[in-house]
Length: 111
Image 1 (cartoon, rainbow, N blue to C red):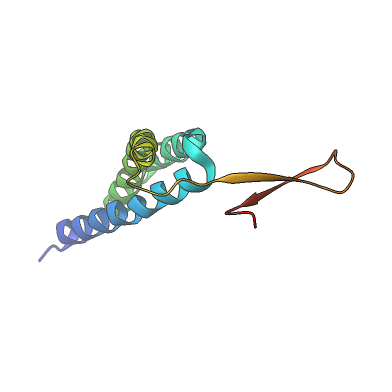
Image 2 (cartoon, rainbow, N blue to C red):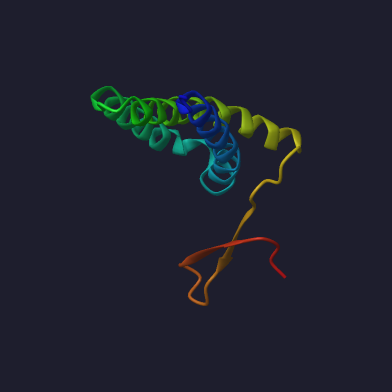
């Protein structure tokens, strides 16, 4: 019996489920400008996928690479979801230091 197909299906399901919160987290903390990281990781995974001899590792890296590429699209869509109010937006509040020249950025409500 060959369980490779089932294993690949479970791995694909796991990676898709894993990347959903990663995209939300990345957009919340870094905005959509972090897309080049997903691009580089995706390209690296695709290159490694082509070079792997073992089919299970090759498919796994291919799925990971495609998930990274898909995350670039999802980052842009997540930005739109935040603009619609479906997800929280990170607020930056600047406070002046005593010297008045240095600025420090804080997250959240300043009280």
